[in-house]
Image (cartoon, rainbow, N blue to C red; front, side, top):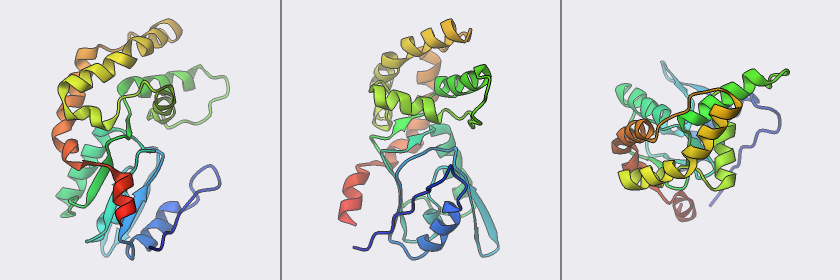
Length: 209
C-alpha cells in the first residue's frame, strides 16, 4: 500500500487543499486526520466549483473512500450542511465515513472561542468556530464524541459531564448566560439521523485499505 501524507509546515494557507485535490483523483482513500471546519478548500471539477470546509475533497471522485479521522473536531451542523450541499449537486456521499471517536464541536466551544478572542489585547485571529476549545475538552477527556450521537441517553450523559464546567467559565469569566442541557441535547440529537450511519472505526478502515 502506497501512502502519501500531506502536512502543512506553516500557519495554514500553504495550498494543501489544491495538492490534495490533485492527488485525490488517483487515491483509493483520502483521510483527514486533524483540524476542523476552520479549514477551507475550493475544488474545481470540470465546469463545477465546490467549496468545502470539513469533508475531504476526495468525495468528488467516484470510488474514492473519504475518512474524517478521530483527530478531527467535527461540527455536526457543518457536516450535515456539507452533505446536503454535495447531494443537491449530484455528488454521492455514500463513501464518506466519520470516526466514532472524533470529538464534537459544541455551541459553548464557539462561544468560548469568540469571547476569549474579544478579551485579548492582542487577538490571535481565530476563526471563532470553536476548534481550539474543542481540543481542550479532548485533552481533558470531558468532550462529547461522535459515538455519543448513537443514543439520546448517551448524548445527554456526555453533555452533562462538560456543561456545568463550561457554564461556570462562561458565566463567571465572560459574563455569558451559558447554555441549558435540554437545548443542546435537542439540537444535536436532530443531527444524529444524518450522522450516525456514517460512523465507523476509521483506523480499521485505513488498515484494511
